[in-house]
Length: 101
Image (tube, rainbow, N blue to C red; front, top):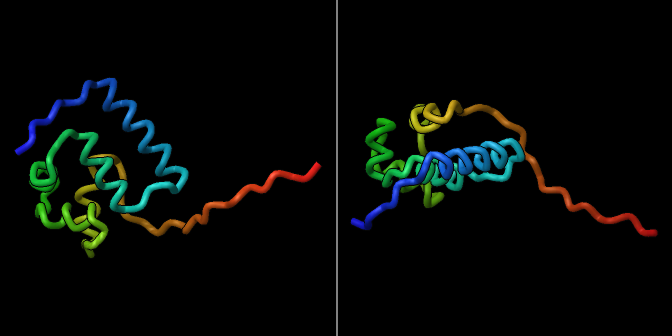
């Protein structure tokens, strides 16, 4: 198993700020968000899964983008970060074209 270097409190806080900002902007997919949450904790997939009460396979499949997790599983994972599954609008990234002068 690879050795991990624990994050400092400052590094964790910086990652959290960036994470919530990206969430607010609708810039994270589910796999990206889950991986970011896990990495902020400094845990492996197996450790994170055990901590959140889901199987390692659930975490692994979500991070790969191949999972079909239940709402309950997603809420178990997201609860640590003050989040829950909900209906959110789909945001399309708008291309801003500069005005011709």
